[in-house]
Amino acid sequence: MEVLSIDKIDHRMSGRHVLFTKVQTLSFPEATGPTLLEINLQVNHGEFILITGPTAAGKSVLCHLLSGTIPLFHSARIQGVTELFGQVTDNLTLPEVIKYLGYMQQDISSQSFNITVEEDVSFGLGNLARPVLEIRSQVQKALATVGLIGYEQRGPETLSGGEAQRAILASILALDPPLMILDQPTSEMDPWNREKVWEVLADLNRKGKTIIIVENEIEALLPSVSRVLVMNAGQIVEDVLITPEVKNDWLRRLKPRGDRSSRLKSVHSIESLEIDKPAAVKFSACQYTYSQEIMGLSEIDLEIWAGEFVAIVGPNGSGKTTLAKHINGLLRPTTGQVTINGEDTSKRKVEILAREVGFLFQNPDYQIFSVNVLNEVGFSLKVRGLKRAEIEVRAEKVLKQVGLWSLRHEHPYRLSLGQRQLLAIASILISEPPIVVADEPTTGLDHQEAEKVMELLKEVHKQGRTVILITHNIELVCRYASRCIVMQQGEIKADIKEGEVALKVRQYWGH
Image (spheres, one colour):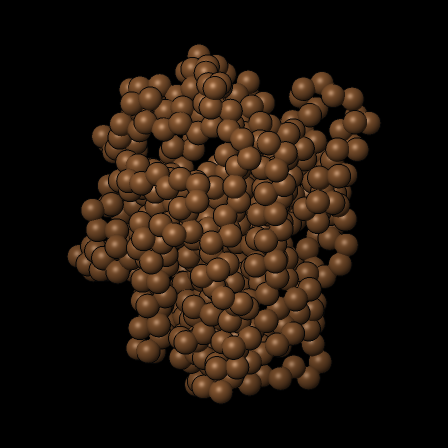
């Protein structure tokens, strides 16, 4: 890592300033250009700052810079300086940083590495050599705050995405830092837990905590935040102090056009279901039990027909992802049976099922492994033996569809999380499977990119293929799905059929 000085740098640090950065450029090795440009930011004590902007705007990289993970963990060429409570971050060690700052990264899998939830939450305090009784007290307080009392001995791998996010947030709350930087901390949470976390953060801010949060849900957070930073193309293009007048103006700008109720009744109908043939997906008395006797699914009976667009909703930990993983054979039922087009999944290899079931993971990094974007998107066709020329034609088409063609020679991990999500989707769409399972496909995407993903799934559905969507976004359910399965505690609580989705889904979802 190379740090270059900036002449006449404006050191405005005082007792009120907790964070200051002035960076002309930040570039990664082998990148074609800088990722951040002309960043000049001062954060005062007690501020609640919302950072927003389109996918790949540089929001996460800015968080890495502010938290000191650049340069502590990520190599970069930086022209400038960042100060944390008056100290240059380059000169701080990790134990010194965590006395001041708690950082929740967008990729939560990189922050969970212990055997149990309790060990994950206590890890930071233990490394600071805090007394055992204090650690236990802080861990219990933090778990209670995020609603995870009783999860202490659960393995992190048994948690849903939203539960995992709450566990990581608890590990930060346990440290009780004066400054928190949270990158998309609620992206995989259900609406209830998301609102609860926002209330917790607002309360902590009122008590004096300084909070910086990256979120796309501007409207929901606007009443709580004191300042909004809008980023685009690696720059802060707007820095807005939220006064009552500004807040009202933004809310008017963000208000959906037209009558909301009429928009929610726009349900896509199914022209014909092949009910005279075996169901595309069928669960028969299916039960699944994780280790430690944790119930994942309980007596599931479900049929999904070819050509349906089915949404699966429910709170975090309700069994949605567990159900989905049975469709492509990643999980096998403890008892009961799952069939795809009439064939038992327990008798078929996962790689064979993958030709019939395209599966988008909740975390796209679980399915990305190639050296560049082009190789990644064409991999499934390569293993099937298609000729290189045909692969390239289809890869170009799908990458242009998702807006990644210009990045085809980039390493996937040079992309933002949202772009990696689009890459994972492209890798599925290129093989044209008859069944597509999308587990939270809009996580981490801005509204424009989320709309693009949903229109792609809509096009897949129009081609006669079956789409199974797992989401917490009820707007998406009402706009795109022809059927909605509501899950809770591993069971199906409601099966809302075509024509009733917009009318009933909110009733079951609690809205």
